[in-house]
Amino acid sequence: MNISNIDLNLFKIFDVIYREGSITKAAETLGITQPAVSNSLSRLRALFDDELFTRTNKGMRPTSLAQNIQPSVVSALQLLRSSVNEGDAFQPETSNATFNVSMNAVAQVSIMPKLILRLQSGTANIKLSTQTVFCRDLVKALSSEAVSLVVNYAVPTPAYIKRELLFNDDYVCIVRAGHPRIKDKLTLKTFEAEKHLLLSEETQESSNLRAALAENNITQQTVFTGNEYVALPAILMTSDAIMTVTRTLANAIKNYLDILVLKPPFDIPSKKTFLYWHENEDQTGANKWLRDQIFQIAKPQKLPDSRREAERAVS
Image 1 (cartoon, one colour):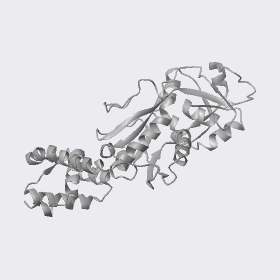
Image 2 (cartoon, helix red, strand yellow; image 1 turned 180 degrees about the horizontal axis):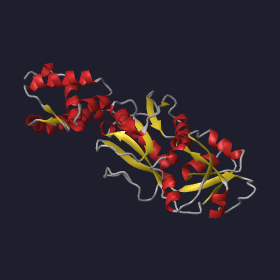
Image 3 (cartoon, rainbow, N blue to C red; image 1 turned 180 degrees about the vertical axis):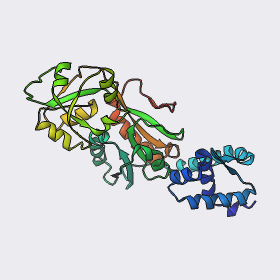
Image 4 (tube, rainbow, N blue to C red; image 1 turned 60 degrees about the horizontal axis):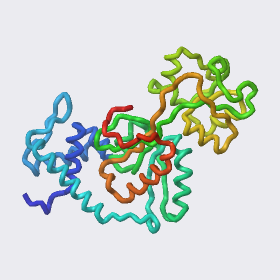
C-alpha cells in the first residue's frame, strides 16, 4: 500500500462512521452530504479490499478488519492532532482569531458581557460570533466545527463531546420593586394568587419548575408565556406579575432593572448549565484559552465540587 496517495480525511470519516454506526448520522456529524460519506467509504473499501462496514437492521456493523484497525486509526488521528497542537502556542494579545460559539440565553446575559469586557482589555483583535445551536444539533455543530464551544443545559452526548459544569442554579422568584402586595417574602398563598410570566423552556417536560409545581400540586396563573428574554423582564416592570427564573438570570436582570429577588415558597431542583466542546479541541491552544476565560467568569457561580464530569448520564 502506497501511503503517499492516501487521503488522510478518509480515516477521519472512518472514525465517525465507526462511532455513529450510520452513514446518515456520520454525514450529519461531519456536516457533509451522505453521498460524500458513501463515496469516502467506497474509497476506504478499495484501499483495504474489505467491506469494513456491513448494513444491518441496527445500523452499520464493522467487520473484523474494521474492528482491528479502529484503535490504530484513533491513535493516529490523535497523534496528528497532538503534533499540530504542539506548535499551537496561542497568544491572545496578538491573535486576530474569530471564535464562533453558541450560548443559551442565560449565558448570553450572564457570561457574554464579562467576556466581551475581557476581550477589550488587551486582546483588541479577537472577535466573537454567536450562533443558535439547538440541543438536538449540539453534537453536529461541534463535530462539524460550525462552533468551537457550546453553553447549554444538560443534554445527552457521546464520550467524544467533553463538558464541564458552569452553573448549578437554584430558582428564585422576581417581581418589580414597589410591587403593591409583595415586599420581602413570598408565601405560597401569594404565589398562587398572583399572575405569572413564564419562559417557554419552563413548559417543557424536562423543566424542574414544571415538575416541582406538579409534585406539590401548586397552581400557577400564567398570563404570558414566551421565549423573549428581553421582552419578559420589560413586561415584568410594567405589571404586578411574578417570574420564576434561575438565580443567574435574576442576577443579570437585577444589574439593569430594579427588581426584588425572593426565595420560592416551595422547593425546586437546581438547573445545571454546561460548557461543551469536541475532544479534538481539548488541547488546542485557542480553544483552551477561551474555555479558561469562560470558566473564570462562571467560577463564582459554580458549586465547590463542580468538576468535569466523567459520566455521560444527564444529571
